[in-house]
Length: 255
Ligand SMILES: [Zn+2]
Ligand SMILES: [Zn+2]
Image (cartoon, rainbow, N blue to C red; front, side, top):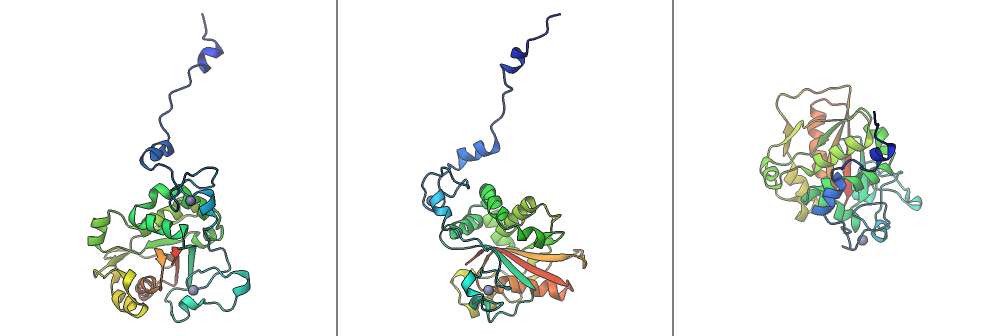
């Protein structure tokens, strides 16, 4: 019997389908989200080498409330000036990066363009912040909900997208639970003052009906951006009232 030679096995490599990354490249040509230049020799897929230098990650030590990174010469108190007046109903807040320059673009893409196509870069960023794995170990992540009208308009909840990236990247036995609902349609917070934001968001959230809470677990609120902390705090109040003993917060950007 003639056996096929080794060559005949190897000369025709199996046709491999296009990788997901190659397909994504067709729909989202790879240019830098900040400067629109080509992305070459970069650690990231959508941030060029030059713009990557302007990305400020929130390495510890950080402000206890908002996660703002203290730079070596500025360790003055546990709270930074941004949130000196905030009395949070959660015990610790963390953030991933400052929402400046390319960080702002990341937040914007997460919010308006469904940042899933950036998940490779979000993963690379999270890998540079190993303390987040410990924080999220065995925790329940609670994305800050959108009002149903907003959700229909946008088609996705950016905080949930971020929660899913955390779950996928950190490999820390994370659960995601949509246990909060938005009960009021609130004005966009972006143009409001600090006082108006607080008022605007008050009583805007509630526990969704028929949910089961596990009081042994740590619950971590997940939001896309930390501005004054009023949204996260309004959510934390609902969880606290429900009797959850440990509530923390992770935002993607600090703006
Ligand atoms: Zn660039
Ligand atoms: Zn702070």
